[in-house]
Image (cartoon, rainbow, N blue to C red; front, side, top):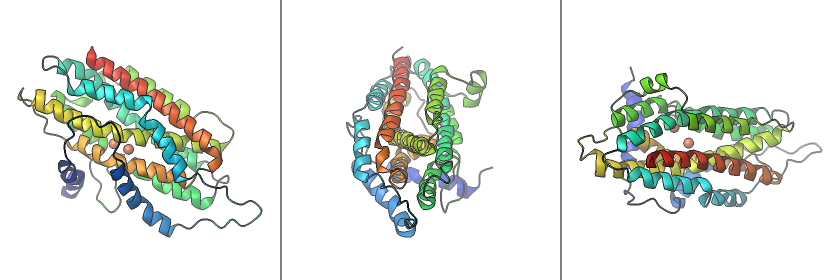
Length: 320
Ligand SMILES: [Fe+2]
Ligand SMILES: [Fe+2]
């Protein structure tokens, strides 16, 4: 049984989420002010306490990629294929018809159950790629990057610094699904464990992150670019998903006497992904050499392409 503290911890971000103004329509741009505020909070302690390794010996440390360069790469995602697909998906989600919403939404929720869990092995693979640069990258830079990257992954399992372990995100999604569809998620997944689009997307992610490359530093930089894209797009994805479900609830679910009552999964993600995006950004600027900008861009574009294909498929399902 979950402890009182753990349950309280799982619900803590909800208070802040409920205070957010409800967006009437999907915004055309991210929330840069929120992102900057979180970034400042995330960066400050690490920059103050972790010194740069002394560049003793004959080989000076490579110059790191700048924040400005990484911001420019992120800005390419703002106008990319995945954001367009997410906008289309959310337009369809919020406007689902009252007489067929359940049949259209069930296969989408099935795909999302697998997809959202499949990011966990992707995050683990990213960590491993950075860890495997031992002996090839600077001790302090590598450690600093990993100190960042571990946090969103630990959060998936309900772990946050200085807090009791809360519900995992799989538990929260299962509760959300059961409240929405009035059936247990576990039975759906047991009957059909690998929804096709989400499985295809997972294979693509792992193929890309684990692509064979003799240069372990290139591999790690690619993985960190891929992680950056996941978290940056997740901010759009989860913020808009909460807004869309709020609209669907108000227009369709509540009038049908089926109001959503379990909002925690949607709310913790809508609140948390901006921080994850800031963490992914900080990991990159603490580790990736300036000369690897092309590798970062390739990784970001690879994820943008595959995320777009997945969400366009989900948008199609909502139209079917
Ligand atoms: Fe999560
Ligand atoms: Fe995240």
